[in-house]
Image 1 (tube, helix red, strand yellow):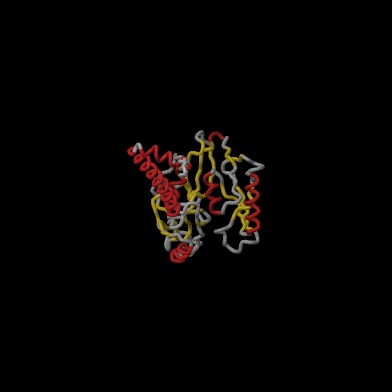
Image 2 (image 1 turned 90 degrees about the vertical axis):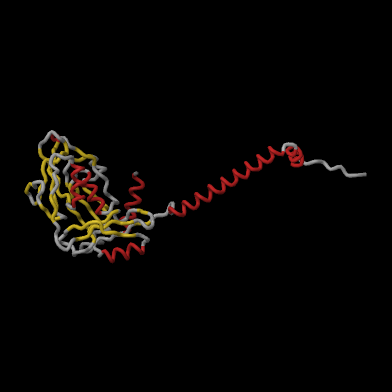
Length: 284
């Protein structure tokens, strides 16, 4: 007696599609195309992640007070590059050393990022002072930085125009547009008080590096008060210092008058900085 072969489900499908060879050919090609597309897309995403170093970053080191050559060696050891884009004159610093950098030290960047450096000129370079009277404060701040000047004290005078630049001063004297001033000169700004009701939000500076905090104060219409280092800071080694306390405190005084002097307490103590990081995470 001969055994009866019972067709399986797969066999039935094969028999069924064998009757339609064109449809079978189309479905096989469609399946192959979808599979190739899926695999190709996956490989492209993997390669793209590797190429862009997705999720990987480098913390920018501090280049302040280094020579461009020293900065180049430090940058190379961190898989970064540096370029000198400008120079200022600071009589308190050694000629040729780095005074400022962008991005700031501590910023997170991708490998091979170019870090822009501003060095200390060997002799003071003089440039014509721009016309900034009656200009908005933030625009004036950007122009001063672009021209190589430093923003100094902010003060207010009666005016119906809030935060409009009324005058700019160097060593207590008004500056006429076109006056030759050395790069790096500290320029004080007199702004309109807007009728005397000029309150600003108190920025939270705890956890910021000192250079970032100083810039933040200027951008928020505030002045830098006394800077008080703790015992972890020796000499003028403040390039990596972190603000751990400020007065006025934003928790107690969420709004303060524009032009207020903000006192900063800074540290290099890792335990203080780590405790501060934990506190900021909890309160946010």
